Amino acid sequence: MIKFENVCFSYENGTQILKDLSFEISEGETVGLIGCNGAGKSTLMKVLLGLLPHEGIVKVSDLELNKNNLEEIRRKLGFVLQDSDNQMFMPTVYEDMMFGPLNYGHTKEEAEARVDEVLEQLNLTYLKHKYNHKISGGEKRMAAIATILTMRPKVILMDEPSTALDPENRRRVINAINDLNITKIIASHDLDMILDTCDRVILMHDGKIIADGKTEDILRDEKLLEANHMELPFKLQGLREFI
Amino acid sequence: MSKGTNKASNALNELRDMDELANGDSPIHRLHPLVKFLVTIAYIYFVVSFSKYDITGLFIMLIYPVLIFSIANIKVSTCFYKLRLVLPLVLMVGIFNPIFEGRAGVVSMITLMMKGTFSLMASFIMVATTPIDGLCAALRKIHVPSILVTLLLLTYRYIGVLVREVAIMTDAYKLRAPKQKGIAINAWGSFLGQLLLRSMDKASELYNSMQLRAFKGEFFYASQRGLNCLDVIYLVACIGGFVAARFINLTETLGGLFV
Ligand SMILES: Nc1ncnc2c1ncn2[C@@H]1O[C@H](COP(=O)(O)OP(=O)(O)OP(=O)(O)O)[C@@H](O)[C@H]1O
Ligand SMILES: [Mg+2]
Image 1 (cartoon, rainbow over the protein chains, first blue to last red):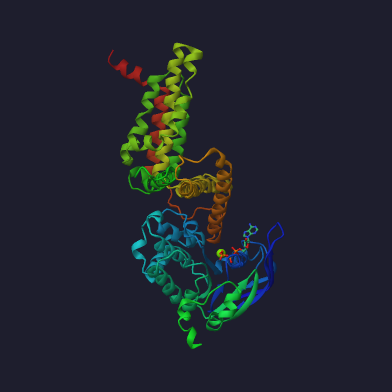
Image 2 (image 1 turned 180 degrees about the vertical axis):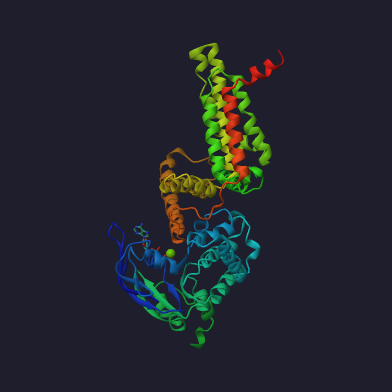
């Protein structure tokens, strides 16, 4: 579904951020992208979305990412930004959710049917006609996910979906992620959330892939995590004595 | 709102209030954005074209904003409150006329102030009854280039982003300089620099997010209905009214009836 072959990215000033990344993600997988601040997780996502230029080969469903394919590729990908305030730019939740489908050329009726369907799926129908600046941070995060789902992406990318959420809303987001039956890529420091949602983890540090494997294996590996400035998930910390 | 809340976040709330006003419902809100746009342009054109000594003629033009405010269910006081920062500038415009022109200058000063105020009121009505996206869609319909319209939209959104950043940054500053009133002069440079960078960052994120949702400078999501009968009547009636007010000396004609 997604393939990176020797992908590099540098800013104009020459600092190389992504260093020779190669990996493949198959359809239906849920992959956690972990790594400390500045590891390059957000950058990787932006490269995949064609928001940043890259060297090497990026493929989405066998289409190579380049200018000609950009539109078709973006159509397959849905990106939930870290800051929902930047994601939601229309006055109301409803208008925000309609934005994508209408731009894709769907009629108002079709778009509205999708909006209702997604809202129901996420139990958010009560938010439909609320103003974006009058809903809580947790609701906004859920609404941001909803705006992306109305476009029916094949792959959903989420950048830190659980930051700044209280336990209840965090749980809500986790459940929403688990209920989605598409390919998912989730960048986060919240290793407990990764543990609850992902089958596979890619550990990044300083623009390189350090480890790539089953969630359980990587998140239990205390030495590996510590070497890359991270800690065991809380859930697994209690088990330390038994390992 | 408590006195302690910072000015920028107040300004932000007011911007958002405009969005809410624009999403309201009234016969004026329901009119086609294009019609409102054209009427507003026409109104400003006719107001500005009045002779600078024709106070009575201008007064008649006040009927339009007052009438529309009441139909749209928006208080005139809301308008003046929102415009309180801009209004003094407009009023200042004619201030030297009395010095240059003597007594006639007083009259021309007053007409100039009236022209400015009326035009502002008319623009306010349009913005307060038309969602920005509707407006953009209307502009596209009359073939204003998509790049310009997108620019308008992004500017509008950018103001929101900018104001939000100001609010966040002044709060952060105040927490670290609690005794100070406002922001110290010597911090202004770095404050503004930071502000620009941060808001540009946010604005580009926002634009990215629009692009990722297939935005290409077209406004499919705004109401796509065509003009209806009411729109046309409104357009013709308004412009007819403006022409009449401008070219027929109504006070004289009305007065003439009684002579
Ligand atoms: N405009 C820029 N010019 C140069 N370097 C930049 C620029 N923007 C970001 N970087 C650098 O890119 C690196 C990777 O940033 P990125 O946002 O991808 O990290 P991240 O893994 O998402 O971190 P976080 O967990 O903090 O979100 C960082 O070291 C950052 O300093
Ligand atoms: Mg990041």
